[in-house]
Length: 389
Ligand code: SF4
Image (cartoon, rainbow, N blue to C red):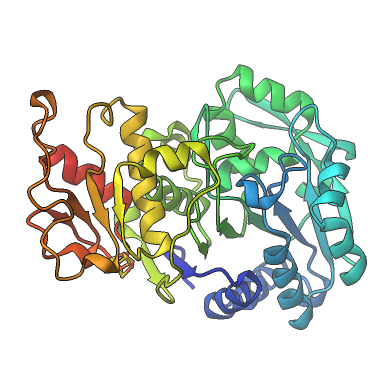
């Protein structure tokens, strides 16, 4: 695996997907290379697994890393002879990490596979500085030989998105978390990753939240992905959510100071399969409201989720207001069809580019007079198609 590779797998069978992804990405080789560089016996490598357990919130709500993914990772590592593992995390300020460990299945995982859990809130902290910012970082995290970051692909009310770089906030002290907020988050997040950065990133993109790190509006994105460059991985996440990497302040800073590359156009994205899971009605009120703009017939979940992300971005910028319902068509049921509304209703003058017939989203709608190609269609492509109109 190279630094500009991103491996993506789609589906809902979390354990099997994780196992296949790790095999294809050859994580073992990455650990062996690092052991060689450090002059340590591979079996003695201290490997840290850092999930996102922001609080004791079920993964299905779109906030936390599914324990099934972490379990599959532990099984892979142990089968390859790596036994010196540690799961470490510190929930957000005001919550107890133990509650998340217990209620989300991490305590049971720890018992079953003899992998210790560390609540970083209770760890000792070492002061480290980059440029003008000094920060307290978990001593245990700094002592690791190999760090595997397991973020959730999801939105964030202040930084727009959260992924690999921001997930490392879980290894700083609570005081430092408050300090980060007072500094506006972007610069300290980028600087933290200059001081300690993941060697490997495995992203839970199963059903992350549309807007909030604490969940509540999960979107079935149905994917797990991995890579070596945290900045590139986060750029992929940004793109998936309909943002350009430059829309996310900490990505621009992290790229500039050499944490990694935000240049997604240079990434080698290897999709191991295609999502064939049919989309289901969402439990989220916001997602259901956005879905009113979509005519859906047998859409694959990942494709549909990308369209929902694009609609959320349109709503954020006020561009959804006044659009007809539906304005978009998606799904295999539209193959060979020319439109979803036929003659349809009229258009409002202030939204003249949203015509009476729907815009197709994805290759299944290629017979439409206007459609955005892709299989699955990308949120960023939908947004750029609309802005070109
Ligand atoms: S364009 Fe591809 S991913 Fe989207 S609904 Fe059609 S087959 Fe599924």
